[in-house]
Length: 281
Ligand code: MN
Ligand code: MN
Ligand code: ZN
Image (cartoon, rainbow, N blue to C red; front, side, top):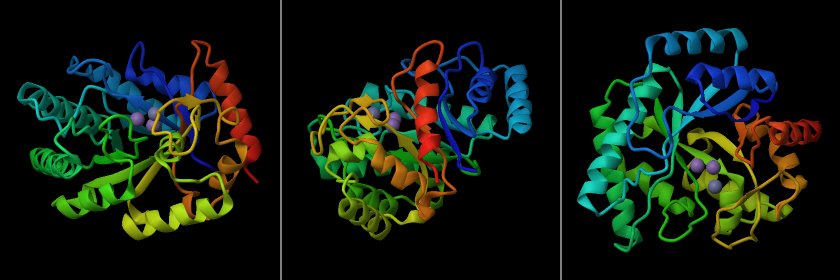
């Protein structure tokens, strides 16, 4: 059975995300472990953690996390940098308390210091965080980005460096976002581009570090470096690449979740999930 699902809201408590996932027949979901637009959150109530664990066990849904959007592990602003590290520690603590296997993180933006310096600063921050949380089981899954602005992580070479510079690479992983890598210039849409992209990923990073996929179509074209998600089949990627991914033996054990536009009734998720399920052989 494919581990297929969508990002789910935690409004009303983290356990409610599992109710929402069950309603839509998801086998895997992604959640924020706190408000994604704030640096810090309240502690998770014990009852919520218990209820979350019970519902996850009953449903069999695989749940992983996504960090808040303010964190920048490459920041050169001292105040912003200190907050980023503290916020990321809180994300890791909450994820560990919820026994999430990993939490997805945008690697960071170099903000003008240059890519080489930015990449080193991210590695330094990761080393600090992994040291601070030694003994934790939760991994950090670095997400591939579109390369908007001064964003890092739009080339597999950046990840290769992070895996080399980090002292405990076994606690790192990668989450591939289909919209992002296409916008970054990886032509996964063509048959040959698909093969070249994954050969390159395996050579530079290694499939063993690949932990999850974000399935999003793209509003913008190949190499646009613009991050705008579109419903599956309605963007510049089209259905075909999702069909390839969903039936690719290399990836059949990995969770794949939607981050496409949503409505409160989740009708758009239902539509996108129905389409994806239809593409599985
Ligand atoms: Mn993301
Ligand atoms: Mn994503
Ligand atoms: Zn995105």
